[in-house]
Length: 614
Ligand code: G6P
Image 1 (cartoon, rainbow, N blue to C red):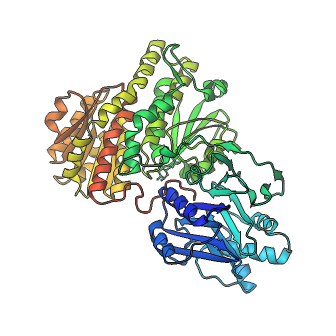
Image 2 (cartoon, protein in one colour; image 1 turned 120 degrees about the vertical axis):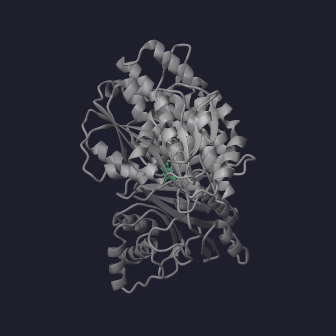
Image 3 (cartoon, protein in one colour; image 1 turned 45 degrees about the vertical axis):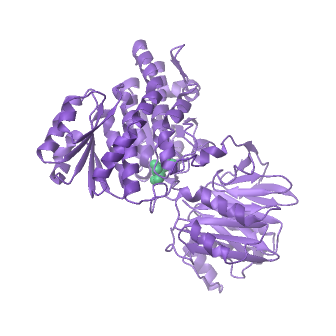
C-alpha cells in the first residue's frame, strides 16, 4: 500500500527511482509519480495508473537530476487521478513531498491554512501537510529539518514522508510514524530511501530502519542525522540486509505468485530448520524457552491477525487446543481493537503478519500491551514494525513474498505455529512423547509431500479450464480443513474476482445449500481423517442437488472419486498437517483460473500487499 523511493548521490536519480517503483508495485497502488531536482528546478511527473504509464510520460520529457523522490499511491483521500498522485508541492513551489499513511487532522490544518490564504489543487491530506511544513518553515525561520520536526509534532495520524527542497541540492529529509521507511547507506554521501528493502538491495546491503517519530536528514556532505520528534538525537543503527536479489525476481516463472507457490517446499524447510531436532526429539523455539512461564501459565491465547494471516490463526486455534490444551480465541485485529476487549495479564497474544506492517494488527498489539498481556509475533519481514513491537516472536523465514495473494507466507506461518504449539505442549506436558515424535517426523516430511502435490499442476490446470467461467464457488472443509476452505475461497476471489465462500462443510445445510445447482462448483477438502465419513455425506448432499464437485482427496481414495466430478490427490498426513498440504492445489486452482480469465495475478485490482491504513 503506497510505495516510497528516494535517492541522493552522484548517479542519475530517475533510473533508480523508476526501478524502485517497479520493485514496489507488488504493494498495490493506483497512480504513480516522480520528481528529480536539477539545477534549482524540479522535473516532476505524475499520472493515474501503472508505473509503465509514468515511464511513457517521462520518456517524452527531461528526467535529469542526481536526487529525487518517487511514489506509488493507493488512494485514501481523493480519487486515483493525475492531480491527487504524489509528489505534492508547497504553495511557493519550493518543496515537493511524498507520503504514505493518513493525516487524520488534515481538515483542521487545511482550514487554518486556507484562512491564511493557502489554496490547494488536490483532494489529498498530503498536499495539506506540504503546505503546513512550508508554513512552519516560513514562520519560524528555522532550518527545514527543524521545521519538519516541529510540523510533524502537530500532526495526528500515520506517515512515512520524503521531502525535497528546490533551494537545497544537498539534502533529502524523511520521517516516519506507523508506516515503514528504510534508508540505504551507500558510499560517498549516497543514500537510498524506500518503504521496504526491495528497491535498495541491489545498491547496498547497509540499511537503517527508521523508528516511529524519527526524522532523518540525508546530506551529501555531512551524512545521516536522525532526531526524534521530541528532539532527541539518535545514533543511526546500520544493519546488514540478508535478503538476496534473486529472492525478489521472478526467476523464470511467469509471475511471482507461481514462483512463490513452487517455492513452498523450500520455504517450509527454511521455516522449520534449526527448530525441529529429530535426533534429540525436541522442538526448539527460543521465544518459548526464554518466556517459559508465560506459556506454561497462560490461561488463554488470543490470536490477532488480518486476511490470510487470520486463516493461519484459525489453524493455530485447533493446534493449540489439541496439543497444548489452552483455550484460544482468534480475532480479526480490526474488530478486536475497537470493542474494548477483555484482556488478562495471564493472556498470551499471538500477532500474525506476513508484512509485519498491517496497521490494524499493530494497533491490536499496542492495546493488548497496554493491558499487560505478553505479545508474541509471527512475522515474515525481518525488522518490520510488528516484529519490533512485540515482546518476543518467531520469524517465518519464507523469504520476500511479492505476489499480493499470500501463498508461501501462509504455509510458513502454519509451520511456525505448528512448532510453537508443539513446543508449548511439550513444556506443559500435554502431549505424549511418542505422539510428539511422530508429529515432528511428519512435519519434517511435509516439504516432500508438497513437492508431490506440485506434480498435479497440469491436472489442476485442466480443472481450471472447466471452471474458469464460473460466477460463484463454494469451498467446504471440516476440522483442520475448515480454515483451508476459507483460505481457498479467499485466494479465488482475490485474484480471479469470482465470488467464493468458504464454509464448514456441516454448516452448508444452514444456508449455502440453497445456492447449489448445476452451475456451482463446490470444492471440498475430503482427506481421510477424523471427519472423512461426515464429509462424504456432505458431498452426497451437494451431488443430490447437481452441484459440481472438485475434491481434494488422499492418494488412492475410491469413495470420493466415484462421487466427485474431479479429484486432486494429495499424500496422506496427520489431520493436523492437512492444512499445509491441501492448500497448495487450491492455490494452483485459483492461479490458473485467474490467468485464464486474463487477470493480473501478482497485482489484483484494489488490493494492497501491506495494508498500512486502518
Ligand atoms: C492484505 C494482503 C493479504 C494479507 C493481509 C494481512 O490484505 O493482501 O494477503 O493476508 O493484508 O497482511 P499481513 O501482512 O498482516 O499478513
